[in-house]
Image (cartoon, rainbow, N blue to C red; front, side, top):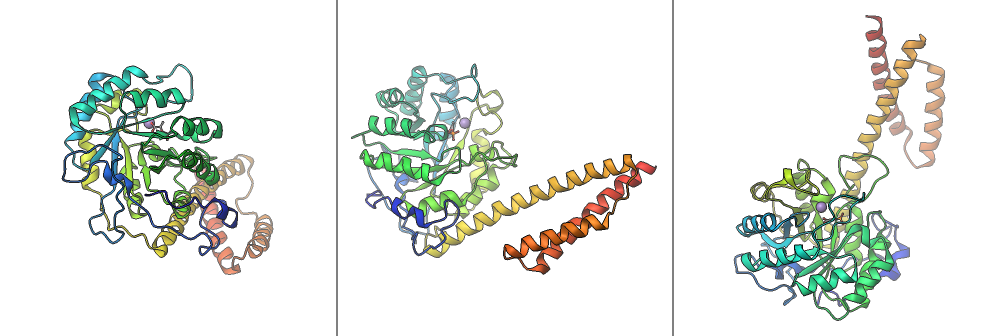
Length: 407
Ligand code: PEP
Ligand code: MN
């Protein structure tokens, strides 16, 4: 069984709170299992979920990730049936998602159809044969979802931040054999995510998987939720659970979906969650990030499915590369912000008739950066090169602003 391995939280303190382990030998990696291929094996008819627990051989050349697709919200009978019918024609789709109770940031927004939506979701399942999944946030949701034969449940990012809620859900699922996907909490807190797994495991829930949906970040990024790939990767190094990447909630828009899905596959995720709507423009929630079933087909056709690589070295490298990508993206944003502030200073200098270059000030800044950077272990050459380039670009920008002012 996938969760026979103990959760290794006692090792947690010896690791970096998030990011890569400080000592990978201590935070050793466990093999991944791929529970989710039970949902709808390729090339066969559909079978009920949760009846098998297949571990896919790591060397399997035919590794195929589990694709979970469906609308953000179940909105109407027509909408969910039309979406499900179209998705059932796509062989890669294994599980139909549909939100029934929607956690909204502001009151008075559409909060889901509730029990009525479950009736429609069950109808979609019986017509298409696609097993279904929905989000549960309270024990009442669990009871209703089970009553209407939902096949798999997920715990949303806003719920996972609250240990009281997670415990209530774990208690409600005691003795119930249903796959439960645990999304990462909105905050980049690996321990909180691990804690949720522990609560479900203690309640005897056997079929657990993680969903990575990105994290709130203190400033704007190109993503709706910043991926911080190293966090889910570290989770899978600590826990023996499959990892699904919810690219829709990471991206928040259609444009980034393809590249983000490819990146998730390259980082050896076990599956993808993608929001799909028969008419995204009219969607009542998350309209900007949903795609049509046709667009989904194109997205899947353009993905390169790689043979799964799960050796220690590959996973550790994947985590480190993910961290580098995040850092580079932050560097770019910081540089852009720096140039913006520099331009504002240029405007100010122009209106107050001050020279662009003030060498004394720059020399002092560089000396300070040099001292701090060396203390951080950076070489003087690197500090010089980077700040020289940044300073040059800044001067050029300000000079252009001055010139524009004199014309
Ligand atoms: C969702 O999947 O529709 C959802 C609300 O996701 P999250 O909990 O990741 O925000
Ligand atoms: Mn959504």
